[in-house]
Length: 304
Image (cartoon, rainbow, N blue to C red; front, side, top):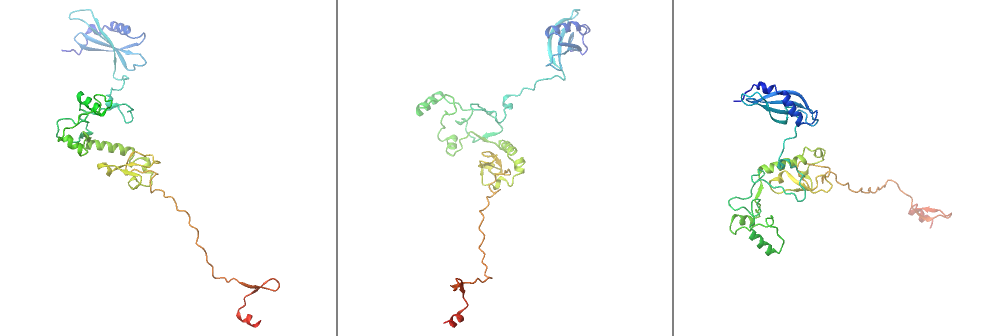
């Protein structure tokens, strides 16, 4: 049974432990003695402060021990261990969890797990994996037949070369109905995509808050197919910040098709007809070069 009380002789071997720590560490990097911890019967670990600039909170741990009924303490091991407040590197995260949107580049492959919660089978009832499934494997003989038939350079095992489905099987029927995809988005996958799209181009974004109208009434919106068309579409306005992006119907921007209609050209003013003033009309010239005004039929008869 492990003893909680450090062995007296092992606990007193501080100088032996310090000498071992100084031999392992760089000169001057071993600090004061911190504690002596019992690891078992006649086994004690001495802890010394570490003065290394890059190892704040770490401690030199030197383990000493002695045999039963022996009076001589011997050295077991000397290592550098982190303390309670040590500066440690972040916990290692697998690459599949470190990957973020936008990290993939040309030629990169991102495999999906067989039990990915974002996907579900496109159809069920067949034991043989469909040709475009991630678990499907092409037979070398069939690869050669396809290469000879199409007269093309085919890399064995590539996704482009898969065995043809058997006629009359579920895979063949799915192929004819346009349901050849091995897996489709599950409800969980749809919700994840919807939350991600709504966060980027949704009603709570600053652009949507300042927009004159929402995308649901915009002529540049191209609706999606399936159940997502009830809440999302694709923006087709080249001057919009969301051009080519999936946007929420509650999103909006200043490029709304009905937000600012071009004003019509100004129409000329209507002509003004003023009939309240009578203008004098000259009929014949006067003797002095002037003109004689029309005085009516009676005067013309008196001069004849």
